[in-house]
Image (cartoon, rainbow, N blue to C red; front, top):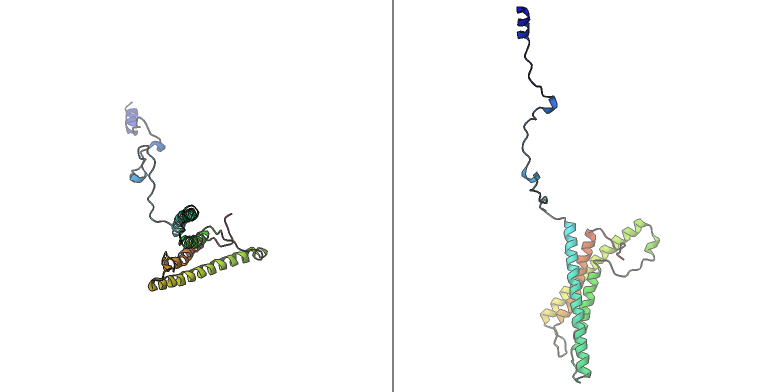
Length: 218
């Protein structure tokens, strides 16, 4: 009897309950950063933009310039129409002709034409002959399109340079028109560098977004 009691005392005591290995307390982990926590049911915050892609920025600038140019063209067309209507009414209704109306309308049309030329380069909307180019392989078509794009840019840049020089000479000479309007000729000559300057910006934007002249928007 005493031997049985001693053997029972020698046995190790078992715990009242044993937890499985999967339910053990996990190890301590560092708390998650504050940016990953939910914002009390609100929409998650977006990370701030540190910089924009240069190509994306050039597309935004080109699109903004094109929109402003179209607004300017609309204003020029409206002013030209109003001047023509007033000139006709004063000539036939009041027998009083405006001597400088034709000259002013001519200047406005020249400015509008050159600005429209520059804006047309943004969407590649100018007419071109493609009878021979379409007979070539796609590789040669792409190469000729890039060559044409670069040559057009160089030609437009040359006209901007010489146009600024000619307009500056007219400004130094203080040259005006011989009519009663006495319109400064440097303003009339400045239409060339402005129009082809817009074309240069459009061509550079097309080069950045990898769109040669062969790929047009219809």
